[in-house]
Length: 402
Image (cartoon, rainbow, N blue to C red; front, side, top):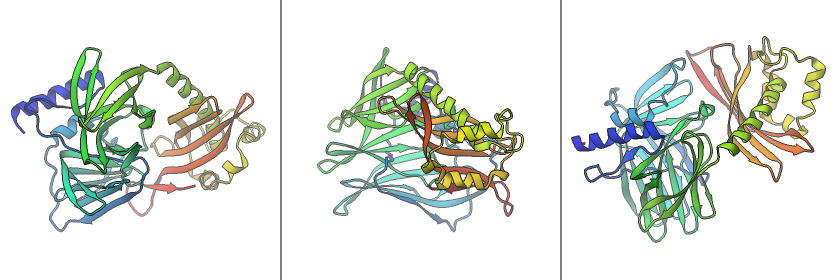
C-alpha cells in the first residue's frame, strides 16, 4: 500500500468516526476495490474449515481492520479459547451463479466464547452456471466474525439482478448497543456476471465514493420499491435509499430520511413488552432483578398473554425446563425491532443476562400480535444462549431451533 493510499484510508476512517458514514474511500491513488458479499436467505453453504499443517503464525498488524472494526472486538470477559492457522471458505448461491469467499492461504482462526474471528487475506470468486470461474475481488487484512451460526452470504433479488451483501460481522450479540456494520455490495446478473459495486454519497455537502459503507444499527437491509434500503444512526436514525446501477457499478444514495421518531416509538413499545417477557420468563428465578414484586397470581395473569403455540415452542419449553440454571436474570435490551401497525404485528429479539454478573447472554426471537388494546406473545423463534461447560474453560454457545 502506498503512503498516499494509507493517508487516504486514515483520512476516511477519521471522517467516518465523525459522521458514522462510509469507511473505505476511493481516490486517484487508492488501491483497487476489493469485493465481498453476503446473502439474505438464498441457499448458502455453511463454513468449510480445513486445519493447516503449517505452524501457527501471528496475524500481520491489520491496520485497516483495526480502523474499521475496533468497536467489534469481543469484550474481555470472553477469553480466547483457541488460536490456529486454518483455511476458510463460504459459498453463497444466487439465481445466476455462486460466490465463494475464501481465505488466501491460511487465516488465523481465533475462537472465543461468543464465536470465531478469522484474520487474513480473502478473495471473492464468481462461478457462473456453466462452471466458469473468475476472481473478482481481493480483501486485505480483514476481520471476518461469526457468532452463534456459521457465517452466511446474504442475497437480495432486484429484477434481473441479485445483490450479494458482505457484512464482516454477523453478531447476534450486542445488537442492542447499535453495532457498527461494515458493508460491501456485489451485483450478479446473467448478462454481466458478477460486479463489485461502489457506494456514491452526495448529501449534506458531502460528495464521495467508497467501496465499503459503515452503518450503525440493527435494522435489516432490504429491497423496497426497486431500491436498496439501509438504516443507520447518524446520530438520529436515518433511512438510506440507494439506486442500483450495474452499468455504472454503483449504489447511489438518492435520499436520507429521518425516522428517529418512528424508530424511537417502535423501540419504546418493544422495550415495554420485553419488560413483561422478563417477568414471564424469569419468575421464580433466584434473585431475579426485575420480578421481585410479582406473586404467583400476577405471573399466571401475565401467562395469559402467551399463546398456546408460543408455549409449545422448543425455545420456551427449554427455558422452562432449565429455569434452575438462571440466577439474577434480567433483560437488557431488544434488537431487530419491526412494527406493522396496520396488521397489529410486532417482532423483536429479546436480550437478557441469565447468570448473575458474569454476563451469560441469552437471545430469544419474539413475535407479537395486538388483540384489542393488548399485545400478546403469539410465537417464539430460536433461542441462542451462552452456557458454561464443565469439561472446558470458558463458554460455549447452545442453539435451540424452534
